[in-house]
Amino acid sequence: MAQDRLTHAHPVVLIGGSSGSIEVLLELLPALQPPLRSTVIIVVHRGNTADSTLTDLLAHRTQIPLREVDEKDPIEAGVIYLAPADYHLLIEADHIFSLDDSEKVNYTRPAIDVTFESAAAVYGPRLTGVLLSGANGDGTNGLLAIRKAGGRALVQKPETARIDTMPQQAIKQHAFDQLVDVDEIIAYINTLGVKTTST
Image (tube, rainbow, N blue to C red; front, side):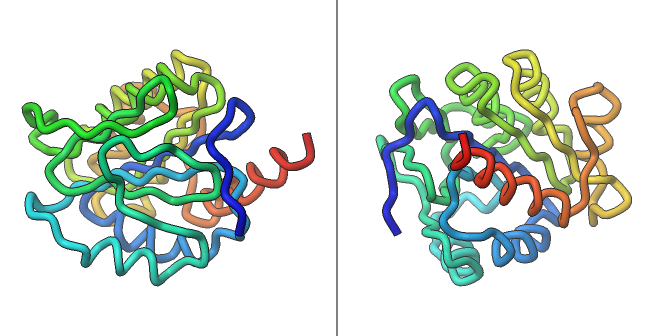
């Protein structure tokens, strides 16, 4: 499958989650239809030691290229990226990734807020943030930044989340445009690609 360097036409979907989010990803990834016309970037709270177990687990669930981010990787359309362990993942203005080992945010690194906020500044209305199950408030400020920049914020319905603290925090702070279940997230990403190719 041909992959293109990300251009201004490509939408970007950020997915953030913590406890209970891997189960969602294992359901979501096999249902994404190649070729993906957007870029999907996943930030999940994970252990501090680098290992390829999670990357391998997720990559085997999709026909779409999935890779863990390295420093200065260019952001390409049609690829699913996974934030590495123990680094904050930043998006730079020239469409490349940057890794940062500064202080933890929300007691975690990578922090969802850090990636969401940096991406909002770059992609504005072409960006969608999706917040999944989790046990703290990470991600809410990032969703607020995405909405302020003109992007769209989707939050997993609390009743479908294994741990609903993260979705509930986003709801409490009015940091969402729509509450969604897994099927709706899948449909949104697949439709986003269709819309992109038809314009």
